[in-house]
Image 1: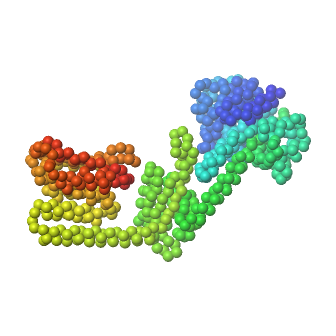
Image 2 (image 1 turned 45 degrees about the vertical axis):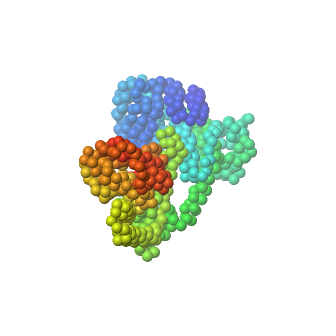
Image 3 (image 1 turned 60 degrees about the horizontal axis):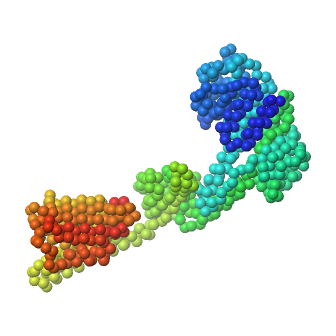
Length: 630
């Protein structure tokens, strides 16, 4: 009777608690009560199939439970139990010759023990071992081992139920991730507890917890009242198999819910045996998996729609892990490259990429994990004619829901496209040729204008200034002609204007700042401003006077998205004439009026007693920093 009470008490806990640690710890405590010992443990089989971790236990010293492991090898009672599936009894380990015992068992004063395995779910390995220990020699009876087997089955049922709950939660997470459009929230499962007669003809008790109707009294018509008609034959067949094998009843099927609607349940029941080994009743639990089934159907439907979309767009679509190993390729890729689905998986897709581009592709994937973006160009062989055509490949990670430590969600997979850009490359090449020709003609035209000015206007300061400004514009065109990005590095621009003015290498000149490029449409006004400042320094300022020093520096100020480029032209050690210049020349108007108008710049020009000071602040969007961002 004590053993049956223990089974009932444990069964209730196992079906109500979702805490595996609590269930296993209580299992050790109750089994000790049932067999009259004060020491027991549950050992969980690890993934390697031979190591057992002391997962729970009572009566053991501190530092054993949750930490100590046992090897289930040939010479251990635990290994024998796992291999044979039978209970293993050692009445006195001091005289036991068959097995070796771990030191912590002897240290705890154990003299006798019995092992029974805790089975796993369907087609799964055993969960582990339930071991009851005694500090005195003891002869465990057959009834003890039968009780322990039934008890271990209940432990297995509890573990299986919790694993099912974990699987359901994982399915919910998969739905939220793979179908970001569908944000269905799955509610917690409801656990139904029931008891059946040995032959299942009578339901003795059922606590429906609002999911199913509670039984008022034992019922022999339970099949008609609870089981959906179309599933009754399947349920009956599974019951007959469980009775025949004296094993676990485990089935998902439809039921008639308490509110009159049809739902889904995952039902699992284990037999309880008497001393003669006869089944006395079945003790079971049923979880409400209606929502799980709905989510599963939505997942299948959503994945089908996503697959239809990916297979319908005129792009080569694929899915990959974070290292670049493909898990799926669209029919478009397979048709374009001639590969099969199996050939494209893992790194197989690289076989369709030009050998010279393999390293570039692998390097791009190596950097994608840090950048959160894959963007690379390589050549792909077109199976129809064998031609290698340039493609652009882009991919972003598909993330799960935010969680602690992962505010953006964990990366589950990468979804990408590969687009044929061969024709675009050809057009860009033509554009480059045309642009180079245009710049060449522009420089020639500037040369003609300079020559006409020389021949039409007699020698004068005005003609020289005019010629120098045209030369500055010509230098800009030269820079742009040599640039593939239609931009000029600010460092090169500053040094070129200083060199053209007459001093680009003097130790009295300092030029420094971060790597910044000015786009073609912004560079010409800046070049003219630097030309005017350099010309003035050579004629009257820091470069002209032996005591002078010129510092040209620039920096980025403000957050990335709104950073300003601030350039400072600072002359020192210059003997300046008193007062501000009477006349504002072209350079002053260019800096104080033209730059603010053309570039939306903030400028400040000051003639101090020590030399010229000029500050030019360009707003975000008028320059590119070293990583290419504007």
